Length: 55
Length: 223
Length: 247
Figure 1 (cartoon, rainbow over the protein chains, first blue to last red):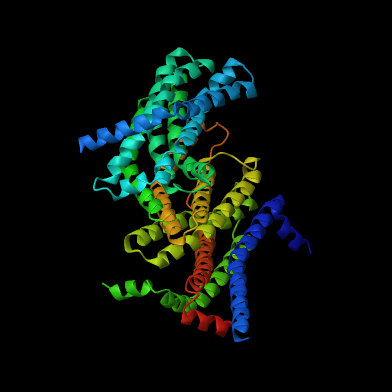
Figure 2: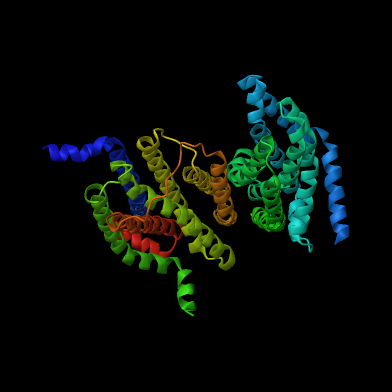
């Protein structure tokens, strides 16, 4: 509907506004995902090490 | 106390003059960088005149950084830095003497050479005294702040580039004030405000930097 | 004086436990604040009479800038705590906060530049605010680079602490000189008109976004600090137990 496309266009400034919000979202998610993934990696490494010890 | 200062100063002086090439290199670098710009942008005097304050100051910044790289390195490597840290005399004072000597052989030399480069870059003779004065006030700040960076990176292999990365942001206020004074002089406006601010920063650096430098050295030596 | 709290703060395990309890709350708060703030700012708040819809970028640019600047001060505070009280947790905080601060500065710069295109017609202008942000980014890079260049962990912590303090002392000086530089070189066309006080419909979503950014900063910081604590205390019994329970 025209309302939605108007929303995305933002009077011609849509590109700027949405690219800003999109990039920021990526950066924020990255800043949370990276430590979370690194923690997963640490847990898995520790599990592997423990299995080796038991053997 | 005065004896220590004098002894240290003489030691630095003697050591420096054993390798005169090391003293000359930053100055040649200064000259080279200044000369690069006319080659890059063309010899049109009005353009050179507009660029001259910035070019001379940036060249002075980079040349100072170059000369700072080895400020503490040889002392670190032969163990005398450790002796300095352990000695009963205040490290801050000894560090101040070392930086003062560094300024005399690098910063002061650039101050002397600057009028020559100013003329090469089409600066009118009337503003050359302002150029000299801004550099006279500014180069001690550059030496002092740069020594903080040199102290924090002492003993690191990556030295030079890291030092530049750490120190150049801190140099920006001095750069702005120095070139601002020059631009004002070029337009015939008074420069006292700029000089006072530069003097302010110089005093601030003189009083505070030795503590940061000493702290950095203590950290670097304790490794 | 709650000295017991202070002493407890020196214990990594205590921090790990407490941050574990607080983390979900901060996370929920962050998501809620950012979601509500964004929707409000994007769709409900009115457009600016001069800049139109591109004004909505403010709801990201300003919070990011706030976090970027206060994070650097936090680094200096952590540095002082680390050097004066030798608290290892302060080292961890400094090391973990620096990259987040750098990212926030990057976001502030990028959104500032993108905002510039519809407003001034070009992506980059050397105005006082953007230039100060750029210098702040360099200051962050310096801290991160120095921390990575020194191989000894404790030496790296102390050196970056000193650098953070020196940098923070310089920040007001840099800010004033850049502001001054900007007025000296301000071309006549770039008059940043002083806006009248922002109406409630505009600063309320802004407040929500600022709080949301701070909450998310805390979430990311806690996550990184907890990870760093696990790495540092790897050999201890409690870490082994924690890792076992997680797998």
